[in-house]
Length: 322
Ligand code: ZN
Image (tube, rainbow, N blue to C red; front, side, top):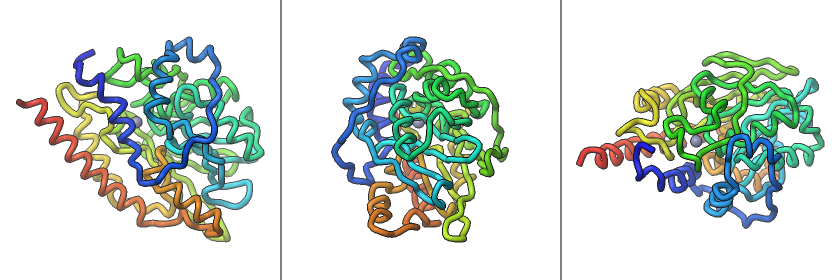
């Protein structure tokens, strides 16, 4: 390890990545274990997973899967937990999943898909917001389960295939089961599958290959553009001394420049607290079918986390320059 102080950071920092904008309900269901093969392959230890689970109970608290927006059998569904956002996009030609949650959560995602009435074996495409274990950890097992194609950016390929956190390669606490990337996606490139078109928006910073995904969804005769945002928090990343990867500070600045004016109709992200899921979901259940439509929501969020980034950079620079 390059620094000892980093050892204490991931728990706090990754947990801080999901601000408690929502009041989480108590966990009501436990995840079952993932296939032991994938875990053994990457030496993701049971002790480390137990610690993650203890320190981030919301990440393991089950949420009844639900449709965020779209007509019946189409659009986008939530298959994550109270603290980690995973998404399911059904098509007649097999399905698309964005993110796999923690290394032992593939079965939780699969169970959610089954509850929605689909077969997880019919997943054809796996996408990833970014190569950090709380979002990429379950992808290897989902791929084994379904034989789906894994599509990701070049910037995150080494971390996905190596099962490590870029710039902290020896930190076993941050390991994820390696998953082979079958196709590299570039910024602005699209994937068309089963009548659905997904567009990749690369904005490195939070990870070197951080990728937001957008798609159009129709509900009630209107089309809404949906964004699943990668993240732009500092979280566990070293910005200086030495940076997590070369150029990370410039990448964060470019991310804010690029995303500041985005106004997606529906803003979703890999931590549901980012978009206030719990409250919106309650309102949807209570009969507001378009509660997730709010083209001002992303702008407010990105302004907030740009402030966090500036604070984080200032604090890390102060520590680095006594
Ligand atoms: Zn992350």
